[in-house]
Image (cartoon, rainbow, N blue to C red):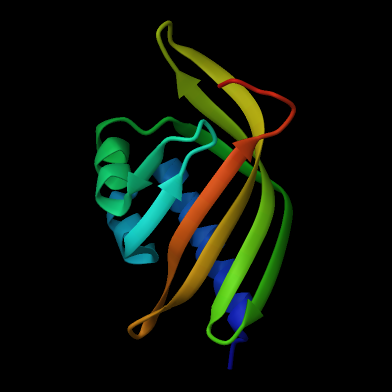
Length: 128
């Protein structure tokens, strides 16, 4: 049987791949309906708003995990990470690379494991 920590790691990998692929259907399965998503600039989205924005315009071109730590206990897990993002910003259209630190909280949601909270911040004063 797979450990909770390993299950969370797999879900995180799936989430990042779905972001790059703009797979809103897969993200819908991975994210809890009660998700609160705090962007590095402080903007807060619900799951519905977050996915609706991604469906219109996905800025994620590439995401690399620089560092990741997963702590799991009692059916929940906290992921702390540093990610290197390559995103499309406009106007004018340009690719921008920056690093963020993030905290993701995963929990049992019915029969599945879903992300219930996400918060990130820019590293090094980036203003993307």
